[in-house]
Length: 112
Image (cartoon, rainbow, N blue to C red; front, side):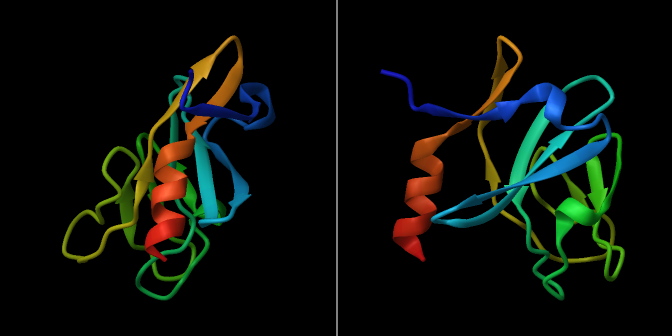
């Protein structure tokens, strides 16, 4: 039995763009790179709560739209001199569909 759930079509996320997925665990930003790599992380910047899904994506990083903190899409860690981290979630693409690990979302909801 798969632990991944379908959250939408890869084609619905623009390259170098993001889409927001609302879950019981909170909002998760799904990012797609130019190379069609997909990443998922909490949508809320720990600094001032900026919506990362509205940030500027560059390579495998995203810049918070409020105060320019830069987060690595692989790790969720803020780069440079800023100190902070957002949770990341396992995602994959199969047959043009984006899938996210349902257990990681459930674990976050249970911890909240």
